Image (tube, rainbow, N blue to C red):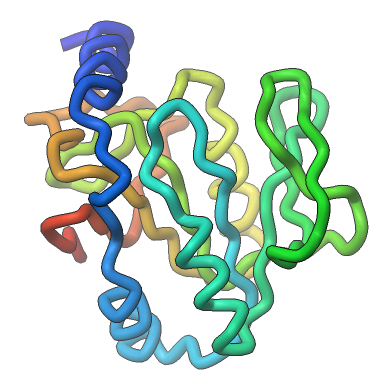
Length: 182
């Protein structure tokens, strides 16, 4: 099925089925980081929009556990950069209506939490079609080792996403019901 059709269908389903009570289990995330030997470091999160699974509570919990937290800022040419952020910091609204951190300290996350429109069993994801996260993941791979974790509702899983050479596979996908690992 075409990405455009999967995207439209899944976004409609997500809007209809959205319930803020569906959460990602923070203990599961901590256990994964323990298994990956990531004790401290920088967590790259996102500000949830358009019925995405909410990671803000997760980011606050990481902050309490002394991890540094960062959020993306959309740059020119559809590129992302991540900047340190604290839950007590003010955010500014970008041209897409998404809250972003004020530029302070550019960082490169050790763990990247990635929003998902749809995903498949191979851990390929579908976003909104701009390629922001695919480009960022490809760029970050040239800079450091990191763990990419997609966050989604279980109903966002599709049979198969036709991946192209620019699509970046995630290391792990966590839903409100299941963990998809290597």
